Picture 1 (cartoon, rainbow, N blue to C red):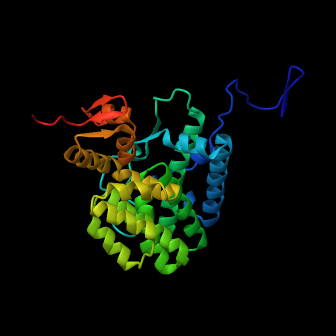
Picture 2 (tube, rainbow, N blue to C red):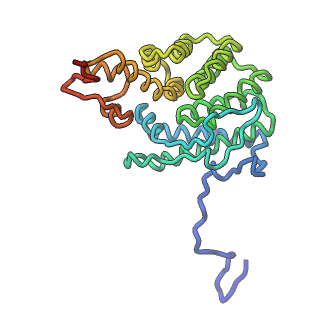
Picture 3 (spheres, rainbow, N blue to C red):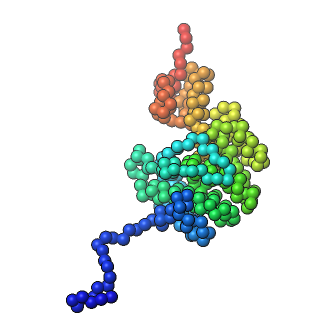
Length: 308
């Protein structure tokens, strides 16, 4: 400290405001050279911040239906449709694969909340990279992966949940076993992903038998997809929990098209409520999204007119 002209000069100063850096964004990716997340204590502190941010996001949403609406507002960019990864390694994910943008259709969506969720997804990627690089396999790594998988499924971010499930089952579980309930849960997610998103029923059944999965709901989905049973498909989807329902959604479009083909071949006319029930889709969506050209007369749908 020095005096100049009778005034005390405490040190250098600037009119620039200090930058408020998000603690989740302050940490870098281990794959890009930031080694701070290789430390166990740092991983645990960072995970605590992730959970706190997610709880704040849920609290801000309020009701459960509002939380689901906000999650549904996310538009995830998919750059690798098959999502295949070798066991024991996290795939190389570019910035575009983890890009989450706010859907512009709903202008009233909470943009700050969506940005929080986007930051959460990137933070979970950083944490997973740190756990894999440090070769940590214990209660913490299991808990962190379980949290990452569940949230990533809710936003249907395949690039996050698919490699995470593989690493949890094939690398962490053999060293630090999951409980029976946890094993059944995440094997079920993998089986549904294989059947509904990857359209690989053979591998889905193989995984199911390898882990001795006993889940009537998953079995019903496999039967519905294998036998094109749209009635069973929609009934099971309405009865499962939110995570399984999100994975089943990958097969919705194909099942809806199949339903329309079956109705078109089987009926001349059919009432509107039945069409919407069988396809699990509103009439407006059928005409706009699926280009259905059937005629609607009151509550009756004219599929085709009999030949005379």
